[in-house]
Image (cartoon, rainbow, N blue to C red; front, top):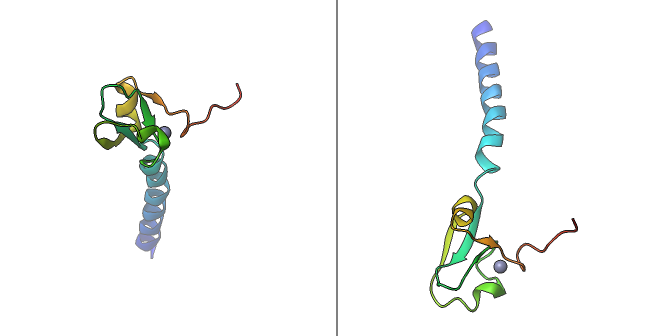
Length: 81
Ligand SMILES: [Zn+2]
């Protein structure tokens, strides 16, 4: 019986700790690979991507930022400071 309780606790702790690590950090965004594009987008059907001359690809947000991409003004409307 004691072993069963320990096992349950172990599973419970495992589930609790797994949640925050999985979802929060990795966020996918869309970028246009054309030379003129400087933004990243939340969706691949954004009007900012309509003029894309090349491909629209899905990357992580961290990758987009590392390529000096800035948030698209349509996908990420500015909030009040
Ligand atoms: Zn956009």
